[in-house]
Amino acid sequence: MINKIYKTINNKYSKFFKFFFFLKYVFVIFLIAIVLFLSIPKFFNYEKKQEILKNYLVKNYNLELIDYDSIEFKVFPLPNLYIKDSNLKVKNNPIFFNTKNLTIFLKFENIYNYQNFKARKILLNDNKSILNIDKTDELLFYFADLKHKIDVKKLNLNLKKEKTSVIKIKKIYFSNYGFKKNKITGEIFNKKFKVSLDSSKKNLDLKILDTGINANFNFKKNQNNSIMGISKINVLNNYFKFNFLLLKDRLEISKANLKNKDLSIFFDSSIKTNPFFEIYSNININKINSRLIENLSLEKILENKEILKKLNSNNKVNYIKKKNWHRGLIKSHFSEFSLAYGSLDFSNKTSIPGGTINCKGDSLLIEEYPRLNFQCFGDIKDKEKFLKNFISSKKFNKDTFSFNIRGSLNLLNKKINFEKISIDNEYVAKEEDIFFFKESFEKLIFDESLFDIFNINKIERFLIEII
Image (cartoon, rainbow, N blue to C red; front, side, top):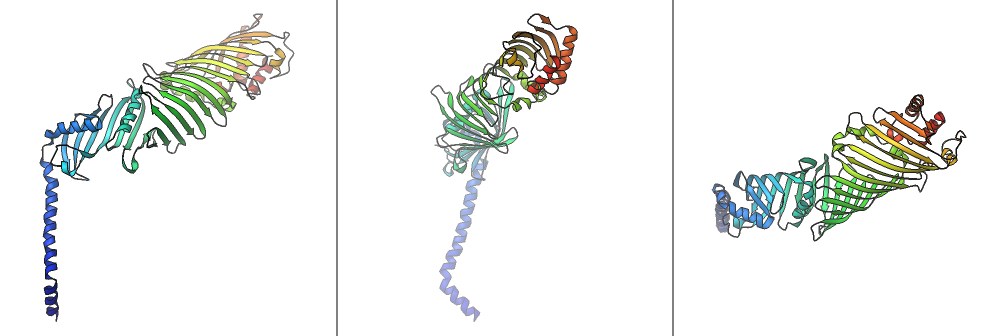
């Protein structure tokens, strides 16, 4: 019975089974052909193809292949030419890449035929680049302007000013096609960040993860290759908006507005990067909470001596009272200060109820125990108006008076030395008086921090002590 069924099936479906077994052999032959097709190129000498590859990279990616260790053919994940330890340079541009793995993914028609060579895409993997910080914009526009497919993985970018490293950006990933098109990820200050460019490549969004920092830059490139635009930055509910113009030697910031619940300031700045790093700022304070100043830590600022050495700045600060600050003690304030290689010079004019106080001085902040040398001139036109902010006193015989104080502050040890104290050139403090003023000042005013000496309660206690 079984034999009869077998004979029936064999007779009825014999052609089908013969065709199926024939396909089996075709499939095996086809598989062997593919393996041979993809394996044979591994034995070719691709050194002979280097000029074709160099020309292709220059023509399509503006990349010059300076040197490399070896070229080999690889099958996976797609047929590609794997160029090991290469050095690349952007043509007519000071941008260099040291790339451990440069991969050129091949089209099937170019695996054997290199005439009219075209690749699917290229991959730069495990890269290092050292770039002058002035040329950052050129790197951004290089990637933004590429028309052919490129993947960049693990790019470590070291931005320098002359021979000094300014900032390091690590593990940068970028692709100009697919669902990750124009999205950049990486690490800065040991924090991960994400950058997105819109399709017009004129709008950039930046997020530094786990920090609360979000930024938006809307920019365009001028005919002279400078970059200008508007930026909006939010750092933990601190809002910063400004216009910018990025030139080859400087960054111009205008109409800048920084505000939060305790602070509102407007300023213009010019940040020069060539030949030296310098900052010029004109700052107008609209609103400030005194706690911001009192909570500043001078010790932490002075710990960063290497940073202080690198800062070169000239600044003007202007404040006009709109609401009470320190119970109305300061009506207006204007100061100029400059910092160069850790050396600080300053001068200011402060308008208070009843008169004005002008101070000037200097300090070398990078010393182990820096001192602030100062000289202050006070011109009090209305004694009663001046004193009523602190105490009711009739101990002064004159309605107007002026004073001159010269001395120095030890910023870290919270000590003061008075060299001269005089009033109207009629009273000049003697040595025992100067010692008394010194003891009272250190006990009642300079007992915590330099930024706390403007506390009106402390000033009141000090005046009660000495008057």
